[in-house]
Length: 491
Ligand code: ADP
Image 1 (spheres, protein in one colour):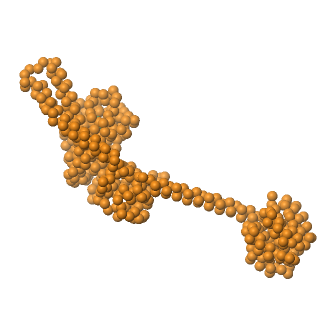
Image 2: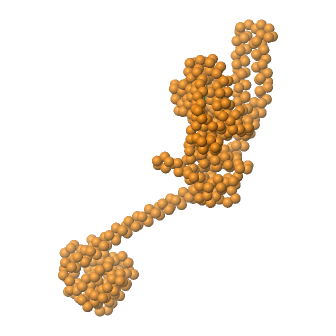
Image 3: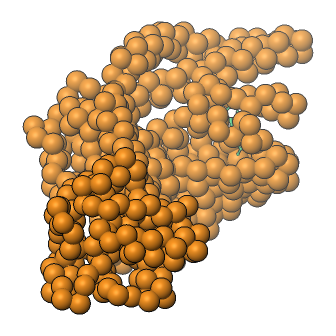
């Protein structure tokens, strides 16, 4: 309920106010002096004070002054006699909201009080809005500082860049891992902040992410091996706003992996020579050079030779992978046309395709700029993809190769209408030794190393490999290789 205090030394005025304002449903209290008024104001909060300026003892002006110190938001309407209009103006300057001159009509008083109470209600609403806004801002600031603290304390390095490659955010772990002497200034171009040659590829990757999807890449900085996960930051409309990179120190894992690879490489190497010799000797016996062999012997020796051959394939794949993992990949980079590589692969694998009555086609779009690559490695990539296509496609099917420019990349697609891969298996087929196990693949031999080799070689060329597949429909592998800067201009 609205509460009003009337402070006036004239009883008739006080009674008049109580009667007029009481009729409006407001609670009205009165005080006959400034001192009494102040005492009441100290005890209760009022919504409005009607204050006579001319009183014996404490004057209205003095009360007004003290009231403002007590309740800064209390609305005060001063009551003045004709002779004291100037004082009323003074009072307004001192913080009174309005004034009313004596004598006044009941309606005049009602209007003034209504106006003052409306102002009070508006003031209260504005206060609530302001408090809410301040609370919202405090919450945002709190959230911001929480996120900042979390990012600051993370063991992984975090780097955010905008769509032009300017540094937007980073944390101390990033500075430490990239061995930077000083943290990169916010707003600087990343390529100007990171000058370490080892990190050049990594910076280039971040630049390229603006055109593609997430990638992971190993980065070697001094004695550290880091795994960089680079992902685009998109707006709600899908527009790429920049990139967020998370760096994880995988040096320990890498060292253990290296020990394992060294061991595998050593064992494979030791096994290759004796196994090759066994295979050769079996071939000699099977060819009948050492004398006639009967059908049963031929059958058994044939199976032994087949098994030996599969083992040799595994050993060769293992050795290839160890070489790649040891960094012996993309050793002879040159600018060369992809068409040469693809034509050679098709030529080599055509007999294999023909043996299964599979049509193997190569389609090249008209303008295909050169790419910088190790042609030997790239041949291995497409040998693996096309031979998989032939292996995992039934008789009479088709395997098609198609190369075209797509944005700033050259895209080579190897598609087949073979057995396909289910969604559960699809994300694992690039893992080492992973082979899909089902009734259709049981009779197909393989090592589970072809696709990991493909992935590593493509990534060493700063490219990516993608796959789409559907069981019973077929598979489509796409290899993206970055175009040379001059070719990007042309494309
Ligand atoms: P593998 O030596 O077993 O062929 P890869 O690493 O080349 O090893 O392939 C891993 C697995 O992915 C294969 O075992 C196979 O199940 C599946 N795969 C690869 N390519 C294809 C394809 N074109 N069609 C269907 N499945 C495929």
